[in-house]
Length: 123
Image 1 (cartoon, rainbow, N blue to C red):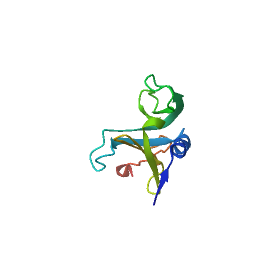
Image 2 (tube, rainbow, N blue to C red):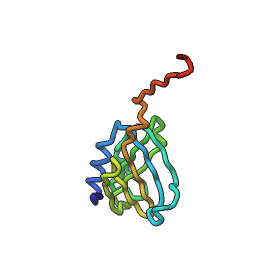
Image 3 (spheres, rainbow, N blue to C red):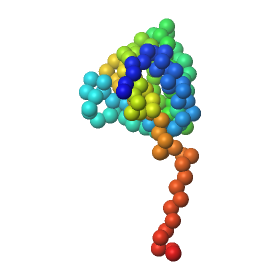
Image 4 (cartoon, rainbow, N blue to C red):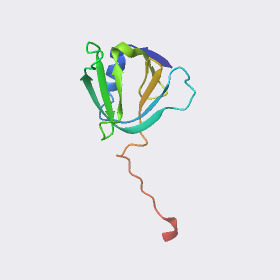
């Protein structure tokens, strides 16, 4: 089941994921079944309000993903075209112009998970 989100609800959902290990997929909102433009994973950081030179009055937030603050995405009120929250994914999908940004909590890829692999040949 999907739920529509306002800008403020989408922002709150993203802020709720700060510090979590997430996957991000950026793709076309116009052709939703096409290959994504970019995918990346890491700890969600940010939620910092920024002012853009061309539109200083618009609310704009930058979310960095991973340790490299250069990898991330923007959430901008003037470009916000809606969002939805899905019970299938643990995070929102944002629509800004012709761009779709999906962000979800990654429980498997977290660096906190450890694997104990034993070599059966050593028995």
